[in-house]
Length: 118
Length: 113
Image (cartoon, rainbow over all chains, first blue to last red; front, side, top):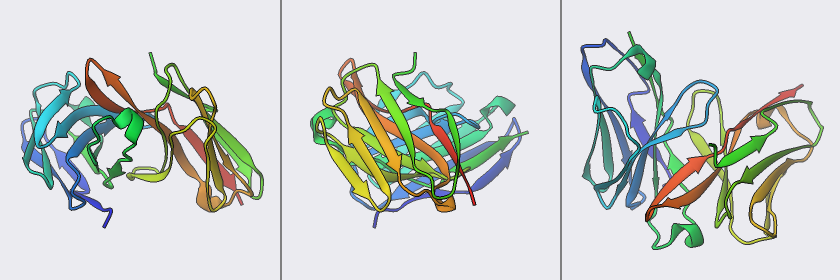
């Protein structure tokens, strides 16, 4: 099973709403990622979790709050977003290597959540 | 600055034609990953290259990593409409002891039937 499942597929929210994006994988991967992708741009890394601990935060605004409750689940809590936060949000997972630059670890992606902030 | 640059940015080819997409890194690559993305969907892993001079093929797609490990090419033979999409190269770079999985600028491919 190489599937990463993201829910919901589409989300429309107001600027005062609180919502959450969910991501699940059962490949035993211990690295999980959130990316943001705007139209006609490559995915931009937001957060990285390693062994359920936040290891990278790419200076993401605090209105985005990630959470990794266990090794299979990754959430992204959204609060007080702006219209410019509208984008495709992608979750990915990969195995953790001691030296990924040498050992190689392909990432598997979910289908994404299309978020529209109104 | 962008660590992975792709060229061309977009490509329109007639069905049956061959094409090549390039990915150039500003640093030595220890692993290069190719992905394909349909509009608005997730990324599908195609191939991983790790050794200088390595070449891999899957169906009509061939990818190669140069000897210096700073450039990779993706070649599609006899393109079909099903090859249309966005092709992204990706690599893992270390920064201050942490590892980041980042992507190239992307190449949009359209195949005309």
